[in-house]
Length: 273
Image (cartoon, rainbow, N blue to C red; front, side, top):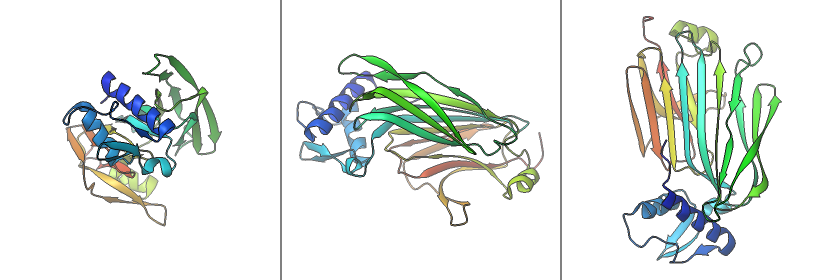
């Protein structure tokens, strides 16, 4: 997990409070020199549209006018496949609020919900205020809608601009993946397996790790585009990513990713191991 340091969190808290309440921040908040971690963070915030920096005057960026309410300081995903095709999923996230926030919702699809319901575990929600020194929590509400689960985080009192919240959840599915190309074709009508994540809010750091029970026949990292028929096409990621792995563990890392869907896609080995 790539987490901001305490100094950069304090800076970000001051910046987001100043932007919300005053529309801009003064030189007393800005980093004194280029090349510092805070200066690098400010540059990332420019890339993500959180701020405009014009001659030392920092004002709200287009993210505010497009209706975004948070920035993810990190969003990490760890998915493991067993030799039987079982799926273990875990995610951890941290948000910093751009505006007052009463709730945050995540929607989870359950592809085999009718015959193999997901096991779901929700972590404790931790709220941090790095300017006032207060800490709190949020509460979860889970609503089932057929194939989807709505995971709602409720904040009471609402989070204030510049406050942070960290949380996560994990799931387990029995026999989720096909363990051979023939089985994948029979069950899903395609010849690969994949895990994807959607970046739907400004995000500083994204990490997707896939752990397999064997060395795959092929594997790669892509952006995903939904086609009119509901299927996906896979395209090369065009900037700012690292994809690495060996044998059975593969990791995609991105800083300041564009708002897209990203995926690790693989095929099983030609012979079962």
